[in-house]
Length: 150
Image (cartoon, rainbow, N blue to C red; front, side):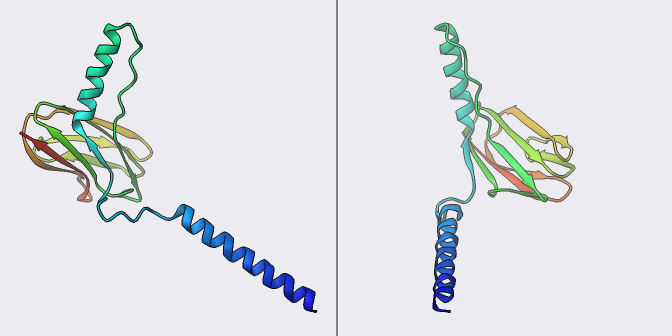
């Protein structure tokens, strides 16, 4: 009887250790400074400049990294994507959605329909400075905040 009780205690202790380890490994980051994913609109412009220099030097150009918003159950996973850019920059971001929606860039009046399970890429030149919201228009859910500096 003592050995079965000891086995039960050991099994319980091992289970507890595994649960705590998984929690520590898989828990979300608790940074108070992070209000969601961020990207610089200027990143795409800099990547384009670097690609042009590489092309002139005969190097193959890497594809620019376009920030992506993943919409799951009608909400942006990881929070609202924040893009900080300068007037004149090329803005580009992608939206992957699990719902049929319309993506609307306020202030620029750019709209694009997206079907569930598909992706849509929004690209435009930042020619108006200010702070602009991009939302899932039909459900009024914000997914991107654009800050275009003069």
